[in-house]
Length: 80
Image (tube, rainbow, N blue to C red; front, side, top):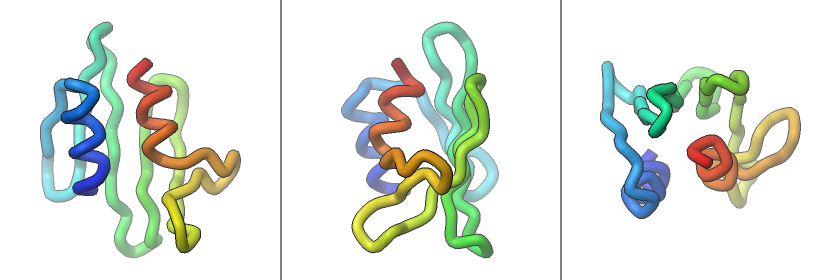
């Protein structure tokens, strides 16, 4: 989560931590991206207007369980 926070700060994104490990990012259009650490599943979940995404550590990076897209690349795309 620290890497995601640093990435958002570098992108000058408006974000805040909500209950526990839930990160809420507000886009310029007012929509939100929710990033949530799912410890029991060993995943990071991302919810955005375009859909829901699950990321699992592959030994090198957090990757989308369906597309293989890397988490920070996806966050950049979603902030777009």
